[in-house]
Length: 209
Image (tube, rainbow, N blue to C red; front, side, top):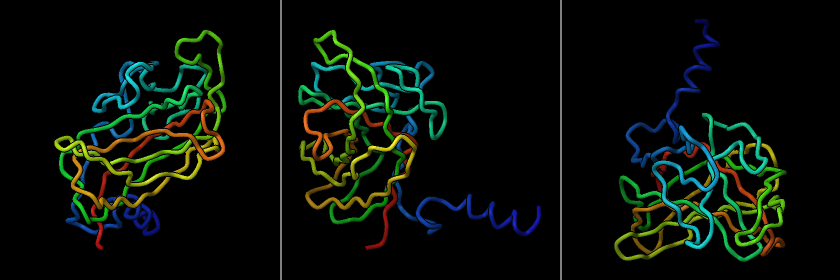
């Protein structure tokens, strides 16, 4: 291995968080939403459905509703939609540790949007294209007290290529032991059908204040 290759290898192998060894971090279960049986209306292993109970759950893509974008990591990714009936989809996960009040964490994931996401609205038969831009909202949730806090949200996702989004999470209300990822209407696209695709979530890493 020559020196140039060694440098590249070392950079690639640095841990998330800039190589600061010993940092506290929370590892997510199934962070790339992999599944031996992907499909429509299936919640990925390790995650829970946080959408409306009378609406269909999220999807494990690709291959359904005319979505064909290859995964950014692994073979699958999460497909979420927002609907004209003012409902939206999301998933959550009970964490192995807490996100502590007044601490600061870094977190990243990859987002895109499919130009084609052909489906009917719940209760209807007409096929619509759920292709409008959406945003991602990241919530902290305390499973004991039911307190929640919006920790971050993305810019509107209207592109059809995978882009990494980096977030700073800083709980200010309480400690949270659940992280929720929710699609929501982008400004100017309220109550319009849209989709959001998510892949390759990083660990949640505590950073210096």
